Image (cartoon, rainbow, N blue to C red):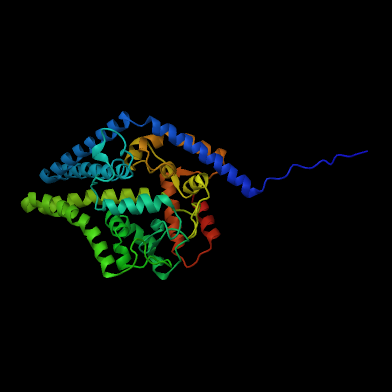
Length: 387
């Protein structure tokens, strides 16, 4: 009698199962993206126009109070109003516009990414290349994302430790945070490449070399934004105040410093922490779904109220922003619960916590990375105990 051999179902190799899972993840996110892009239109243009008008109104009020107030309350209100303008121009309005969120929307011509000028000391063209292309294209991938280090500050283990990293936490808090716009311009324009070594084998982030031509290019890019911006803030407006020029200079400096500290506290939360994924040089995604997963797992969200989220430019939803960098922040807020559910469904890590705890973890990781070749697990256990 002929017998029939009964075979057990073949097990799917883990790599194939993962690839299939991430493929479905990518397809689900693509559907979300297509749906939301189809909804973009007049409401989004109206939103950014109204917010920009509010920002400009804050600037007028702030500069007037700083100029004409001779008592601390009016002066302080002026500083806060001017800070609100600078913060909105840097984040919810400026950051979004330079990403190209309004490039294809009729009526939003003044917010085109190639022509928009934000009220920060950061060169727009250099920022678009370094941030939109390099950082968003390969987040936390060594040798491609230049934002895994800023000067002497090492933000992931992909940048080798050196003695200069020992003081990176106080340097971050006392130098980098209060001068964030200034440092970001020298970073993206390549001036840091002229003056410093990035600590990695390739040594340079943006310049091809340190030839005279490359140096001239870096200085030109840096100064074409520094000169008009700082001349306006610390020469033109103070000169209008005559003998009280010092008061206007002080008010402008305080507003800019508030913007820089707030922005740094926002941005340092985005991709820094023991739990955040970082990738060695040469890492490339195998397909759209894996790229989405890499972006999500290399990012942090944090939970804040809507007004605070607006001042953060939607970067409290860093995961959604990195999945869909050309969507306006209000759309990211709309889809965040759906994205979180899709990450859970497809086994993709979705990091979220309060802003305070996220910043504490980020600073704790920066401190850990300041030690010579500290073991990874020790640092992670430290941060888990802090959370």
